[in-house]
Image 1 (cartoon, rainbow, N blue to C red):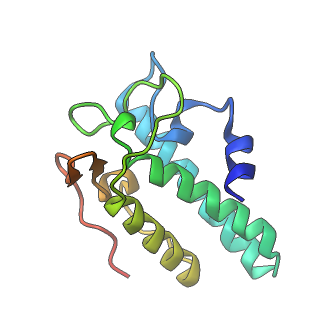
Image 2: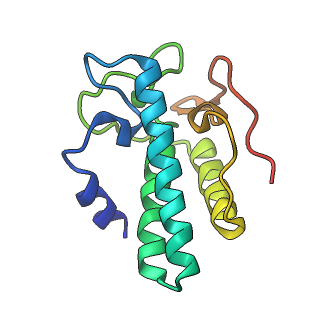
Length: 143
């Protein structure tokens, strides 16, 4: 499924990687990434209600992909905002925040709910030296 998602997102705008284009503001990139995650989850919920497991899984993986990317060091600038896209960011060896994203995405799917607020700011950044909170980080969703 991950290869299918990566193929579908290849060539898309930077926000699908939780990043921004060279002439894009942080606010615009953050808003587009949040919208993409929310819409992907809404599509997953709709497919789930229709009993279409493959469609639900695909859209759930799309949302997870973007939210996971927000935890990658290369996807963030020094202030923890979406960095300028220079190619798909590479992951860190630490996966604390990525694992939190995975857990929360599963819970969102099971409960068919997306929390309010800036989803990107609810998760920190996995660095090579370990996980860190981003500046002005919001609390993780409470289900």
